Length: 140
Image 1 (cartoon, rainbow, N blue to C red):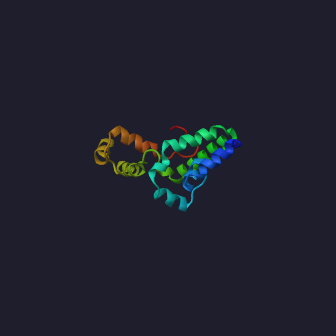
Image 2: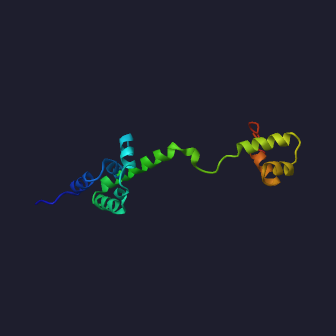
């Protein structure tokens, strides 16, 4: 019996896996069918031994490994692009607007801090951070 090439070994291995898992490991795009299949699948399909065996076979093929890594990276970037608003701290635009309105009404930073919460210094900095300078003015 002739020995199989690394590519034949990899193809034979991934052929035994569900389609969604094969696509996941190879960095291929999913469709709605794959998502439904994943949601209804047995969690044991994602066992570490499956990924370890896949990467073990992939190590024998450097070109294919680079291609899979590139696809996986692209896919993860696409997933991050879906919800960029979820990253980082929430903006304080509304609080800054309220603070500016109260300051314009003659309230002190201490009074605004008591109303909105925070310290007088944090309120002062919040208002200052939202001031728009005229074009060319770099005195900020």
